[in-house]
Length: 239
Ligand code: G3P
Ligand code: CA
Image (cartoon, rainbow, N blue to C red):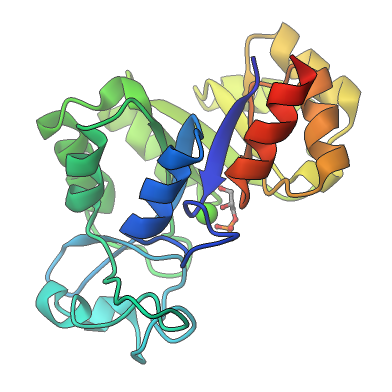
């Protein structure tokens, strides 16, 4: 049964990567959430997509130049009425104790190689007993291989945009149990072959009805969408 991962939470309707967007994804009956992580100046793992806070918050500047106390004062819901701070990964993990959702952590360390970010995240996962509910992904494949070396029991999946040749072979070569391809460059045959070879396939970012229907038909492992409510509705119609 194809699972539904809410991209940056329920970001079609709520401010991305906020606790509100994650809580609303759970209410929409998503199976999991996808989120992005960066590191503050004082080493706190925070949930935000860009290296800079400018696009999504009331502030300006790089995440790496803020302390956690400083970055918490910013509003990550600048278009909305209710103030929503940038969450720490700890805060997300505490909320995950109240549900059974999976969490795809995308390491955003392709621009700044945040030192020890992988170690810090794995420590938080262990403290919170979440090893079986986490999938690490990144466009920085060196980082996910490093995660695998530190914690071989936690699933990893490379993110990629273009049409990789036989991506299941590549996934196996870096000890990943899944792949997270851009859905536009993904032929049905590639999905089928990856699944037959025991590799989970979770394309991103799937928002059109027709694309969702196609992935449900193929019994793809999961997909990542901004609109989990739409995906859940289409899935229910298919049953
Ligand atoms: O994890 C899938 C997707 O989130 C990757 O792209 O830019 O939305 O983080 P981006
Ligand atoms: Ca992401």
